[in-house]
Length: 474
Ligand code: C2O
Ligand code: CU
Image (cartoon, rainbow, N blue to C red):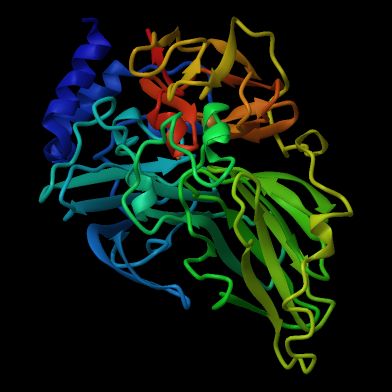
């Protein structure tokens, strides 16, 4: 046990109780000397000295959720809502979020995309003990950098019970002008209890075959936008000549979408929360864990569908409406499929360029990863190993780590790294899709935030069945 392990162990044992004890914070500061400089470090210092700017309470509790005309369902919810309440902060504010577990089993909360201190990362048994039923846990971190994030449970398959919500960090100095903004969360909906997928069980006539080939999908019954089904769509208001910022967030258990808006193109301004040079497209793919901010110009009056069509699921697309105030052309276009879903410009990651992203550096560590699984077995693997029976990737502070991935399976794998952002070509992200059938993707990150960081496929069922590893700082 080295010094850092000891210090972290001590902190973990003290858990939430330690949050008020300056001595512990002081010890932690001594234990951390992250090299280089990046946004990650802002959250890596002592956690109790700075005053807190926002106190938030999240109660995780069973509740009832009405979904359009589909009915009322038993779900697990944050503060009785689905998606959970929007947590909104200004860049640089310190948040103290008390999570009260009123579920019949343990839980944790992960702040997806925020490069915070390792002990606040919400991965059970890795960064904290699970919050037991009836217990509370206090998360405290700095809302930095600005961007569109999400929070969600990180315990087992709980994600698909409904424990997700948006986390928005507003820019101190916005780099774009707009008249209004909306958050749009597109999710897959599972009415019952999430269960691991098995290679033998498949639905429908082709089900068994598909399952054997590793193409099994959870039995979702609908796709929702902001918790609303397409028969009772969520409606976003806009006025002629206004510019709207939409924060597109995909906190789905296992679904990738192609999104488009009838009668409008979208100007992509942020990828996974980080600003990019604006790029106008007609549609984009958004994988589980990904976020895109887009601007939409109000210059085509009417009522238009915002549609998210699922890649892995044979379900009617999720649908919301963009409604112009004083529009007299009523429902004219609302039921049509946006043209952008099948033609026009589809966003390619390679076309995006982050603003102020660091140049590509010579890696000091290179990892070649083969993503596979699902064939005949229910395990999903990285280099043949299924987490937790998998060796951690050991790195050192200051390392420039290059990760190259090949997807040998028939399912897409959106791979997400905790605690860091990474470079995919010219784009700064924290989640990157590796497409099926030998799809490839590479990312590079600077090891600037010590700890044990989870790295996994954001398909919850793949993660649960082994497609995960730890990056461990030595
Ligand atoms: Cu959305 Cu392990 O994360
Ligand atoms: Cu996957």
